[in-house]
Amino acid sequence: MRTCSKKKWMSMSRTIEAEEAGSRRPLNVGVVGATGLVGELFLRLLEERSFPLGRLKLFASDRSKGQTRTCQGKTVPVEVQTPDGFDGLDVVFFSSGDDISKEWAPVAARAGAVVIDNSAAFRMDSDKLLCVPEVNGHLLPKGRGGVIIANPNCSTIQLVCALQPLQKDFGLESVHVATYQAVSGGGKEAQNELAVQLKAWAAGESLPSPQIFPHPIAMNCIPQIGSFQDNGFCSEEIKIMRETKKIMGDSSFRVSAFTVRIPAWNAHSEVAWVRLKKQVEPEAVLAAIKKQSGLILEDEPKKGIYPTAHKYSDKDGVAVGRIHRDLDDPNTWILWIVSDNLRKGAALNGIQIAERIFDLKSGS
Ligand SMILES: NC(=O)c1ccc[n+]([C@@H]2O[C@H](COP(=O)([O-])OP(=O)(O)OC[C@H]3O[C@@H](n4cnc5c(N)ncnc54)[C@H](OP(=O)(O)O)[C@@H]3O)[C@@H](O)[C@H]2O)c1
Image 1 (cartoon, rainbow, N blue to C red):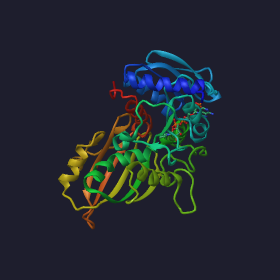
Image 2 (image 1 turned 45 degrees about the horizontal axis):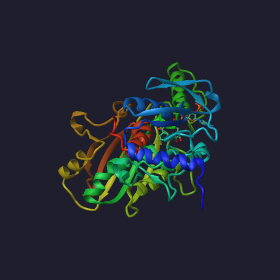
Image 3 (image 1 turned 90 degrees about the vertical axis):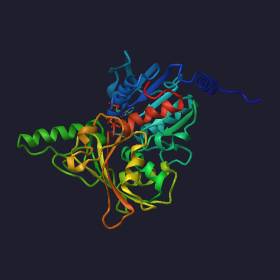
Image 4 (image 1 turned 45 degrees about the vertical axis):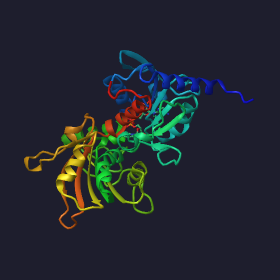
């Protein structure tokens, strides 16, 4: 007869408890990368959304040892990951980069946790779900631990949220997207680099040499996010193109992306040229967008009303505006899409995944 290891048994019993208790049982939560931009936002969102929090464990690098963070009135020390550090956790949010996720996410999953990973480590694995709840949330496992769910790239999330109603109602033939991405997408050090350069620029001093971005970011636009491949695309563009098809469960439409880093502090903006399978009237496009949960329609351009990064920084949801038909191709629609890359583009999407898995009433 096969025996069941203690870890596996603990994980199975937690799964059953979670299934039986639904949202009633407080969940033990871990956050890896808890001192970073995404990690700190996870803590704010657990509070804002009254997530039913039991035990909270926080992890970061050696550099943060000795620090604490507070969430829902609990002040918790920051630890470094250890092989048994994830035992007893129901859900662990990872936001520390690809290498840390590759090494530790499987450890947390083997300990029985639902792992929600913000890095790119597992996104394209054929056995891992890449999830945006509004698009493919129906594929999430219910209350089951021991799984790794991948959270998509921030620019991909806001794009697929806007594409979803158009795909559903009219079918997609192709999508071309250009991004204007904020420095927060590069983490705390990237924001710091912009702040230091802006200060030097305002004082008329020469800019300190960049450490994070390949060129000065203050007063600049950089047509590179990530590293270049031989085909001329950079890694961020490849992520957007591949992830979009995987999440939408459709590889029949064409996607092409061009990504640009701009000196916005937070919230990414994108323009997408979306070719539909059908020729439709503007009212139908607007109605499809209006009825989609998580999308905000802000589209009165003549009055200066359209989404901007300033307005949607620190806001939930994905805002869409400047919706108009292409002059040369009646099937192509042009959309301006703005969203907070740290919220819907990372931590909020991760928490929404957990809320679905554990059947929690969203935001409560
Ligand atoms: N920023 C975004 O818009 C965004 C959007 C989607 C996905 N993501 C992904 O989310 C992750 C974090 O991004 P971020 O913007 O929050 O970066 P960040 O501000 O630079 O934070 C990085 C976090 O990782 C921790 N870390 C570094 N080395 C570690 C180690 N050896 N062990 C454990 N933790 C370690 C850091 O801890 P210390 O403070 O101790 O160094 C910090 O908590 C990345 O994978 C990123 O690609 C980011």
